[in-house]
Length: 135
Image (cartoon, rainbow, N blue to C red; front, side):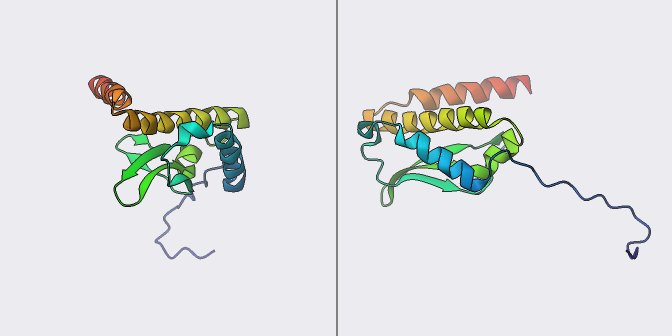
């Protein structure tokens, strides 16, 4: 290989290795979502969406997101790329646990929205505030 960069040494960064491929993740997500009683998905007319993207909010990876839109309706988005960055080569069991926790968390946002409460939002804000005080 010729060295046209003035004898500079370059290091190729390794690609993130994931214990679950996108297809395996999708299959697992589908199986977990199928366990949810239908009555809890009332008015979740946009359903569950899986994106291959990484999403960050400041220092935090966004694993999932509850979206409430006046035109498009309500949906839950799962970000596979964020799981890859957080879990990388963790065991499939750890992936399943994190995915299930994320699904339940986002579903709670949906159910609280239907009930007209925002307890989970307040809990999240308190966690972020505590994090900011220690960092």
